Image (cartoon, rainbow, N blue to C red; front, side, top):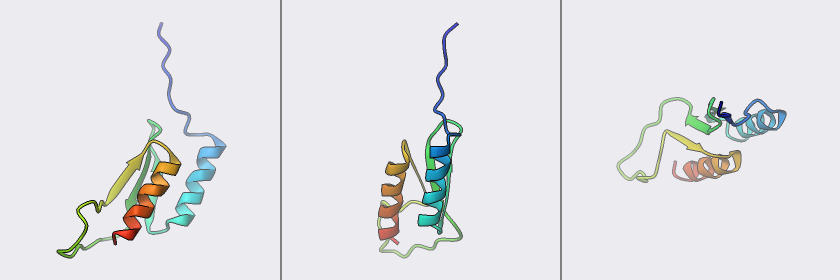
Length: 79
């Protein structure tokens, strides 16, 4: 029988990092999927003007918390 490996997202480190990100970016809802990917979506309604940056996203995802932090920071600049 083949072994199946899943990312362990229930570790204390992941929960701690999730809490840090949530405090750092209160305008975003941040979570870790069952598959171990990190996700963030903007809270509330977001209206764009005609000059918005084409890279602007309502939701972003990443492989790691560090990558998600960088993605959200970049999105914050694009407001």
